[in-house]
Every structure is written in C-alpha cells, then in structure tokens.
Length: 276
Image: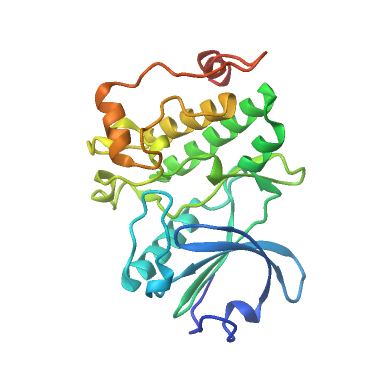
C-alpha cells in the first residue's frame, strides 16, 4: 500500500507519522537509516527504512559500498524502484517482508517486518567458535531466498553478512534484506553491466564488467560463507573497499586463501557439499 500524501523533513507531520511512531535507530547506510517503530493504534512492532529523497550537500556522506551519489530526481526514482521490486518479491520465509510504503516529497518510508538481530552481530557473539550447523542453516536459508527472488527475475547484487538478518518467532530464521541495489533481469539490462555492490563480495564477471546474471548472488553468498567460517575474506584487495583493487586481484587470478583454520570447522568445499 502506498501513502502519497506530501510530507516534510524533520519533525513536521507526514503521512507516515500519522500511523507509526519512530523509536530507536537500528542502523545507517549510504542512502538512509533503519529505525524500529510501532503502529500508533495496534502497537504492533515493525522496522522502517527511511530514505532521504532530497540530496543537499549535507546528505552526501561517505559511501561504504559501490553506490554512487544520486541527484534528488535519481533518489526518488531509486526509492520507487526498490519499493516496486521488494513488493514483487512478496512474502517468503527467508526474505524480510515489506508491509507498507509511504512516498512523500522529501522522505520515503519502507515499513517492514522486524528482526531480532543482524548476522554480523550473531557472528561477533559466536566468534571465535562459530557452530557449523548454524553456518549451514544460514547458507541454506539464504540459498532458498535467492532461489525465490531469482524466480521473479530479480538479482540482489549485494549479498553479504550486513544484509542478512535473523528473525522469525524464535529469532533464528535467516532473512535476506536490503534490496536497494536489486535489479530486474528483464527490464534493467543496462544495470547488469555496471559495477555495484561491496567489492570483497563481488563476482569476477561484475568486476570485469562482462555482464551479470543471477549467478553473481551465489558467488557473493560463497564469500559470505567463507567469512562466517574463517573471519576473513578468501582474498584481500590492497585497498579495502576499492573495486579497482579487486579488479587487479581478479586479473592476477584469485590467490590461494590465507587463513588460520578454526579447530573443528570444515573446509569450505566440505561445507558446500553438505549444503548442496
């Protein structure tokens, strides 16, 4: 459902604030923030992603992944695009569900199901002794999420631990989130030629700008599984966060991984065999 009443930034009334109240900021990204919120009448808890559509100088902060700075017009298009693709994904056990969208003049509010915590926080709590079965469950659940969105011709393009949450009734169900870089394979052909995402998780064909398919998401999940197992990347660019540096790594050929195996953990190949 989309509320299209014009709104204002800051503390002024808006359509969103007529239904929900913001509570605690949960995170901050390149283009917006995520807050916990509750419905004013039912008191049901949700999370909400707040995207700023007005791009003044103060809105152009440091970008941690390959997301270029957008003009106001581009930001509004991008917000509508994300909402449309997310809505098309629909309800799935392993995808964070979008409940309601408020597109206002300065802000876009994407109200979604709440999750207990992030995979990153769970890994921090478990390290240095992550449980193999927990890693297997995360990989398997995320594969199910990817199979679902790929069946709808959608490529995520930014699979990484930061975009995987743990939710559900028991707080252990893996949920794929953040579809801000997702593209429609049928309609966004030009987007499948550009470099986008987070460099250490990017597939070689993206870095080489050779064109992309849904397979890039599987590569990123493989890197995510490696990070969960060993606490580091299978290969490290000389300049972390640099796509150019990652291109140099790929051009030389992916070097043998340098890691210190954690006791009693399986090799990545054996983990893949068990997940298959």
